[in-house]
Length: 343
Figure 1 (cartoon, rainbow, N blue to C red):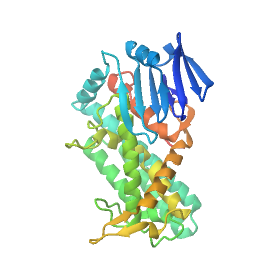
Figure 2 (cartoon, rainbow, N blue to C red):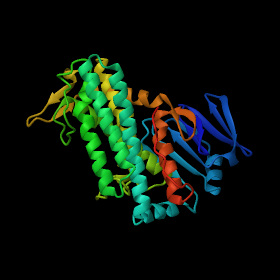
Figure 3 (cartoon, rainbow, N blue to C red):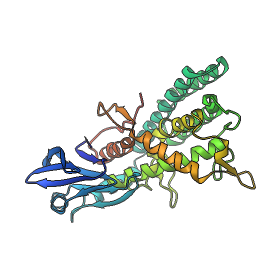
Figure 4 (cartoon, rainbow, N blue to C red):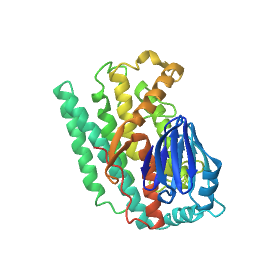
């Protein structure tokens, strides 16, 4: 359990949360773990097997304090709000921002800056751990290209240029991604990103983990009360969760790509876990999917330092924190969206 930005996050299974006068008491299997004055909380976010008593739910509804329920995998399930919701104002601000090119561009620029910087961190780590000089030099060159992208980003005046810089950075990155594969490299060779369907094993692996990550970012947007289909970096398209796609950009390399590389390098996944379909499409078999999903959930439990909060939090909570920070910018409570910078 964590309190971040006046939001109580409850992640421990079999947690009971109840109201005792003006105090929220949190118990796990009958043992009191924490108590918090109710007025300190702006919202409560529950993951998995967490029970809130009816008096606490009723009181939160009366006070317009938001309660959000996700399942144990982070999928959004429900949101409890009082009769008058502030979300309409947040969504109105979210829609209004679309017509404010200055605000839209600033948000998109910072999202891409976070993505490129975090990607560069992964590449630099790969260069440090490289087994040979060729790989090290190739990854260092990619890191330099990403640094150039960051520099150009700071001078980019509009969304199209920002999208172009992001695309260019991605091309350089995927061209050397398999330099970080240290075992069975031929089986997991990748030269560029492809999908729908993925045409090689690494793209199939990345696509699957990206789908898990997108689901978490969808849940984060829903949990805060944002419309997940109204984004700023990604073009609006019917049925497309543009905002969730925006939010996940900062986490692709550090959460998804690092996990894919770890699974391959530790031989938790090998070529026998993939099936090639007629036409060249490559799919992951059911057993491997389960193993990847378990590894993904474990990865989300690892704690990282959040630079804005200046404290360690589970990596799986960071999309929720970033969604909340973005909501503050849209409401006008903060001047600038600060992306998550992995250290």
